[in-house]
Length: 408
Image (cartoon, rainbow, N blue to C red; front, side, top):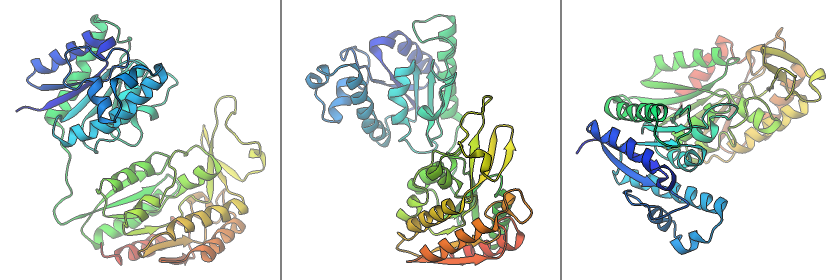
């Protein structure tokens, strides 16, 4: 049996387009598995999985569903699809998944796609995948390809047929030539976090670690998405140890900021009992986005110690009371660990620009944070303070040495 591509389509409004996609795929030697997520009409023939089947999997009868109004029908179908799609994949019903349509179809299909494992080909083609809309609603922390359809998927014409064929071709190519690489035999996978202002420190530590053990390292950009992606892979069991050297996403989680989006950082590694060394990289700053009108800047921007990262982002040193609050929160999350966790705090700034002489250097804030870590770290947390900046070679060496002590 050849590779199978699942098509998630609403046959009540996109039957012609769905059947065209199916013909493209099957004419090229692949099989299709058509999942109908219609919400208006539940009896359109031609699907392998009908809307009624999807709903029944979640305990919703056809009679109950037909009493719902439109928003409730959409919500119910979306939730039901998230429950059935991962199970269908586990049962080997498909190798890749594709949806082509407008906003509603993408809104229904994408949440279910996000629940599939990393490496499974996933494509969302939508007429709403452009403009001021973000990709967050379609991608989240998963490897989902997004394709704007240019024209609305409303009938077959030279434009829609071209786009549909392109989406199908992408799915076929990913199934035929894609490959999800496994960890090299005998090696362990280390997840590490970094941001521009901490990259040097992380890279230096990783270089020493790679020399001292048999590891593969994966770096995550802690920008509000990277931390979430790392934790999604921890959840999937793909990560053996963590070198979490950038907690800036926690600053933005608590104080607001450009790198918001990754909530409850640290908790997943603790929950899964992943060996971990933590450094509060860039926890001592928060960043704000600047548009052409200066919007998104806080009212107190004039008195914050700050430096421009680029033309659209300010890096701002946290106030002492904010630093104490952030350090306490990090400790609260790490203190939940029922296994040893190492926390290493640099006393001369948690980012490159906070080093002595740098634009965000503020020894008062640094000292408040150090004392807060000393006060609140407890339980199984091993706390080290190092008289250095996070990007100093001496600090990276200590971090690497402590990591290698974990004997992952």
